[in-house]
Image (cartoon, rainbow, N blue to C red; front, side, top):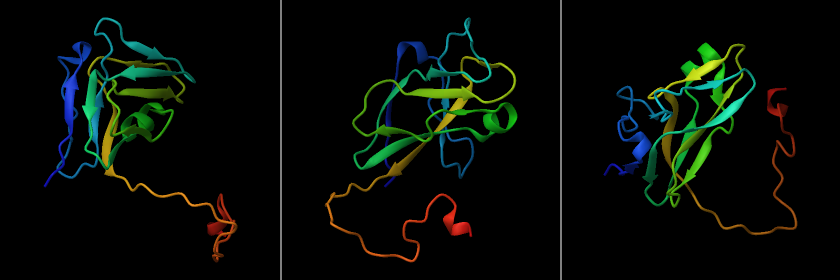
Length: 150
């Protein structure tokens, strides 16, 4: 059975599309900017802003929402997410916002209804944390940050 994500539109997002998949096998649902039509938001190079989407959602228990960048914005304009992926917990009921940052060399205008990020819904595993005096040895050991590429 396909999980259901219930979405409520907020007044400032009432005319925007619901998050949508853009292709038959897309992993993420596009999220849209709910900035005022008469007041686009301009991100100067090196700056970031929290962009409203005009929606709240209820994720199924045992899932999370991962807010991820759109590759086109990154490739064409240097615009991506400041915290990626952003995590939406299944019990969060506030507005979904997107932290966009402009790493490009020119100002970037965020307009109403622009596709600004994507939402991937994923299953999660909750674990039990157990303190240990020491951990099992592995071939990798404590090697990190590029150590497996040598």
